[in-house]
Amino acid sequence: MAWLLDAGPPEWRQLDALRRHPIALAHKAALYVQGAVEAARTGYRQATRELTHHLPPDAIHAVLDAYRIEGPRLIALAQSIEVVEQALRGHPFTPTLRGGGRTGAGPPPPSAA
Picture 1 (cartoon, rainbow, N blue to C red):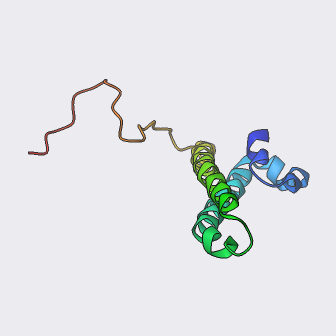
Picture 2: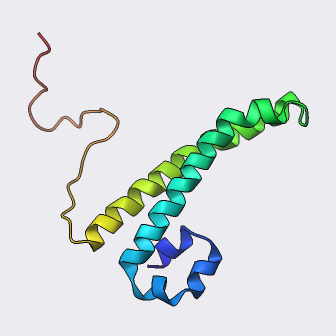
């Protein structure tokens, strides 16, 4: 459960309820990280407008690059937490292929004709 505790602020480690109830921890972590995803999206959308008069263009590009790196990391973390939460709730895990790529296994997709 340390991994889920790491997804939130350090203060969570002091909360007995979260350490004793992994489902509660997973639920809280999911909400917390989803909030971070939304904050990163908002920050990315607003960075240029909000920072133009305070930072040089190269710094704004660096800030946008930081959001481009952080966004996918946060989304992957949110997805991982969701899988863990579902497992803790007793839901079976069903692996899926992401990104639309084919692995070469199985029959080809149906024709769009």
